[in-house]
Length: 247
Ligand code: NAP
Image (cartoon, rainbow, N blue to C red; front, side):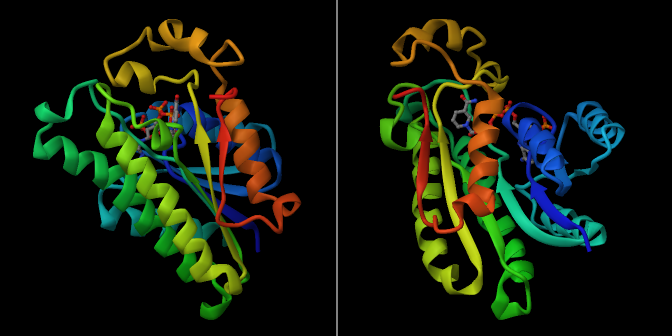
């Protein structure tokens, strides 16, 4: 049976970099997308052309039924041994006094509840308690979790802080069941997420505030994620790794 890694939000940015690297490392990759269908299919084709295995599945992590379909597709590919909880969203920069309930429902539905439900599905498959062979989970947190992101997206920062605490708690629950759970906290990374928050010039504006003087790349985050997934990180669990250029 092939070792399958599930990656949420693999059509673009950090998720797509994780898909490429996971496939290179020999995993069969089952990844999700929502709106970028063409990019997702092109990425799956690119991986297959390079001799790897990848399948793109339309699956919104804000919908439990979609998550069940994503994992059912992964089961068809082999044995699930890894999950990258990557799918995440920001919203327009704004102060808390202007937030709507709809904004908060999306923010926490995608970034927190979606990640926890995906972890649930992975544990049901990977835990030795359930007859699984063990595995690893890496959650995408953010430097926002400790910076707080005032006047931008305090709601997003809070959601990522929840991911850090979830990472710690879950890691302790399943440490004796063959599953390691860690998080990566990216800093300012060159992807389209900034434009989706209404700030296409965010990198230019803020790169000089990073101690290393530049934004990071999606590949630099994928390297950290795949390292935490690997046996080289076999004694690491419950940790959140800053990949921030020193921020
Ligand atoms: P991105 O470029 O905006 O890409 C987001 C990806 O998530 C896309 O593939 C998108 O798919 C997918 N996605 C969005 N909503 C989804 C949903 N409801 N269900 C499933 N997939 C969904 O973002 P990114 O910069 O690569 O960020 C990836 C992760 O890193 C996120 O968790 C983000 O919070 C975290 N992060 C990023 C930065 C940064 O500076 N870039 C910093 C800190 C943390 P479609 O395009 O198909 O909709």
